[in-house]
Amino acid sequence: MENYSSELDGLFQALADPTRRAVLARLGHGSASISDLAEPFDMALPSFMKHVRFLEESGLIRTQKQGRVRTCTLERARFAMLENWLSEQRAIWEARTDRLEQLVLAKQEFLRHEQKQETGR
Amino acid sequence: MTQTFNPDLDLTISRLIKAPRSAVWNAWTDKASFEQWWIPAPALCRVAAMDIRPGGAFETQMSENGGDFGPHLSACFLAADNQERIVFTNALTGGWRPAEQPFMTAIITFKDHPQGTEYLAHVMHKSPEDRKMHDELGFFDGWGTVIEQLAKLVERQH
Image 1 (cartoon, chains in turn blue, red):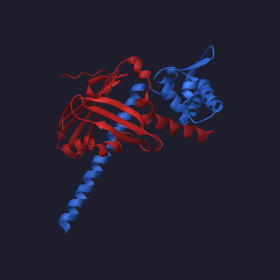
Image 2 (cartoon, each protein chain N blue to C red):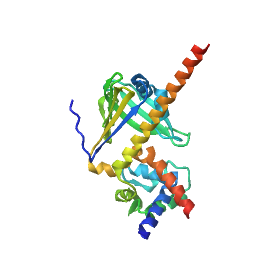
Image 3 (cartoon, chains in turn brown, cyan):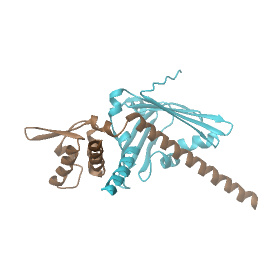
Image 4 (cartoon, chains in turn orange, red):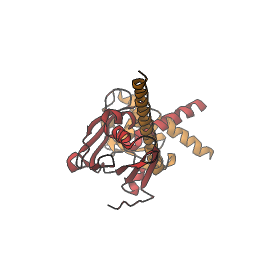
């Protein structure tokens, strides 16, 4: 249990950085080489490599070297530790529906207020 | 059209919204309104296309930090019944063109209710292997935020 929670901490730390999250999102579409992954980021390669190593140590990706090219692959099983996929999708739609409801009610309130002003004159 | 429900792959969100059906429909179909609720703040949403008719394009973009907008949802409307139903899928893009990474179909229904509108979202997903997949949809929309908050919490505890 102790071990599990420290693993989770590592995962959360790995995901707390926008560069690392962007790398994971990119790898969600398929494996990619380090140079392809680094391209969109305005940072020196050694700094980018630190992020890659962090992700690898947290178990979220695995890397494989063939010749001079190192390829990164998303370790999908790792994500299962964090959440159940469908409940996550549900949370997204629940929150979305909450926001829709709030917006509609706020607009209704605004209209009622406008009408009151009209009739009050 | 019979709708089937698969508990392993589908989810339904049902909500009574205390406002007339036209108001809920407008919040969905008016681009400026839609942009306000589709993606959780502080990320920004931009509707690049919302052609609500069968075959019409449905494209949303998002900006995480107020900078450049990146892709978010790229989909195609399959059905649009005024103030009653909207169906879209990301298995296709505008004009029924097959998409790279099919993932889900969503059926949104709006029904009159004595107290307002019964809003129902039925979302169908592709297959079990997709359930482990985090493309931008699953990854940033909510998930990223949740993780960020958890990370902050974890950092404070260290």
